[in-house]
Image 1 (cartoon, rainbow, N blue to C red):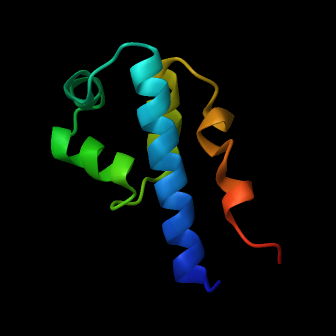
Image 2 (spheres, rainbow, N blue to C red):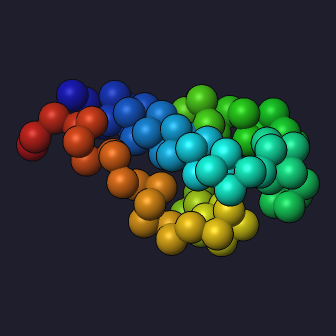
Length: 83
């Protein structure tokens, strides 16, 4: 797997984690987007893995949905091929 492919896998897994934890706390995409001051389409793109998320924004997302930021990375390693 090359770097671009790995980045795509990571983005998709983080997006799935955001969606999972957001829904676990009962928050809509609209509510998350409002709290982060971004468009709802941006949240949709993050969750679909179609838009990259900066480290500070990942931290703010985790803080907003009240989960440790490390949980957003929980399933990433298992989706990547061994080096």
